Image (cartoon, rainbow, N blue to C red):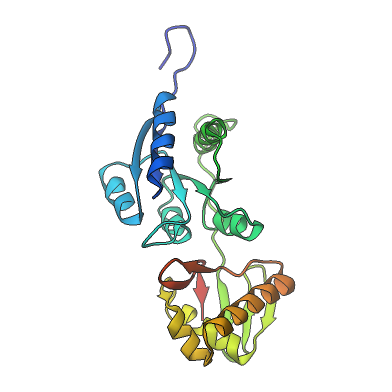
Length: 241
């Protein structure tokens, strides 16, 4: 298809914005529509799923700090489907959060406050990447690399990272991780975890903090144990017992 001047016309991106802050969502939608894109909005994972049932977008702009379901869990669901580009937009700017977001399937990670021009450029980059720009015409898409799981060794009380690094666990750390490996992809509430460890809320936070530091030091990888706002914790990468 040409633009009438001898150039090739590309289809405008179809974008779904998943953001629960109404003012920011409105700003993003208005800007992208002014750029000629087709844009819809959703405020949480449930309304996102409803929008996806109607039509699959080219790119999803996904906030991590969503109500009801954490954005990292949503990114993992979207990655498993594998049909949509994902740009994470979030106020979480720590290196650990960026790594986690990218490991969960995001193509690009942008931190707030957003520069709308950068957001527009990021969408263009994802579209080019997914359309195979720079590759041979008609070449098959590369086979995605399987995501390797984290493993919990119950016999030796060890956590084994996807890269092969191993962490020796204390009794408290093993009891903390066990429910996430016994029932993967579930959210475990804080009180249940505190009861398992026989500690109060402050003691639970201390165990989690120390475990995260130990895992990163021993394996060079970030423990994918994420806070699900108002609910508890979830292990947001594949896990095997």
